[in-house]
Length: 378
Image (spheres, helix red, strand yellow):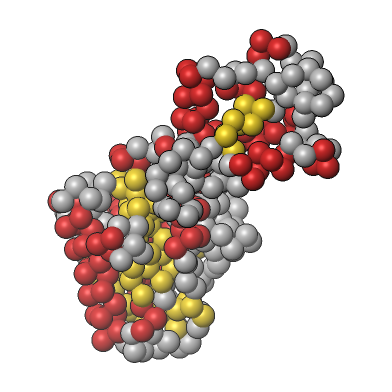
C-alpha cells in the first residue's frame, strides 16, 4: 500500500480497529503511543485460492487501495484471514463493516464544537411513580434525534445539569411550601445555565423533564430565549425519549370556546385536553362563570406529541391563541390553566408564556386526589 493510501486508511478509521474498536495508537503493555494498526485486505492481495478472499473478481490494481483495506488490530486481522472464519468474514460482510465504521467515525468527528448540547434533566414523581432518565439514554436521544453531541461537562460533574425533585419532602402530596422549594431548585439550575452561557460553555440545551405539570410550565418559562433548546418527550408506547426522523406534523391543534361566560370577568380558564379529558365540572366553582377555552388535537391519544414537528405545531397554536386573546379579551387579568398535558407540551407552553408583557397572567393547577389545586403562577 502506498503512503497516501495508508494515510487515507488511518484517517477514515479514526485510528481504531474497524472490528473491535480498539485504540491502535496506545500500547497495552508500556502504555506508550505507537501505531499498532495493520492493513487487512478485504479482497486478498493476490488472486489465488491461498490468499483470503483472493478469488474475488476485484481488479489487481484496486487491491492495494484504501477502499479494499480495513484498519485492524493484529488479533482481528489474523482471525478474519483464518480459513475457518472465511465463511463468516466474506467480502460483503467486511465491506459493510468498513463502511459502517468509517461512516460513524466521520459522523462523530463531524460533530463540531457548535453542535454540542448541554443536557438539562428534571425528574420527580408523576402519579406516585418516579421516572429517572439516565445519562446514557439522554445521550442516545441527543445523538440520534438532535444530530448533536451531548455535553456532560466536568464543571457539571459530567452529568449535565440535573434537578432531582424526588428528595423534596411533600412531593407525593404537594403543598405551597413544596412548590416554593421546587421552583427554587429549578431557578438554581437555570442560573447555572445562564452562567454557562455567559462563559461560552452552554450554547445549546437538550431538555429532558418529567415532573408535575405546573413545574414543567415554570421550567419552560425560565429557559433563556437566547439559548437554543430542544425539548424532548418521553413516549409512552416505546418508553424512550428519541424523536423520529423529520416529517410533517401528524396532528393539528385548535382552541375552541368551551364557554362564553361573563364578558366582564377578570378570570378565564384554558383546558389543555391533549392526553386526556378534563370536563368543565372539574374546574373550581369560582372559575366556572368566566370564559373558558379548550385546546385540543384533531386526534387524542397517549402519545399525541409524537414528533418535534407536532410539538412545533402545538407551540404555534398556543402563540396564536395568546395573540388573539390580547385583542379579544383585553380586560382579562388571569388565565387559569388546567388539563392533562404531555411533558414536552408543558415545557413548550411555559416558553410561550415567557414574554415579559404577556397578558393575562397565567396560573397553573395540579390535579390531586381531591381535585385541581392551584400550584404555580408564571
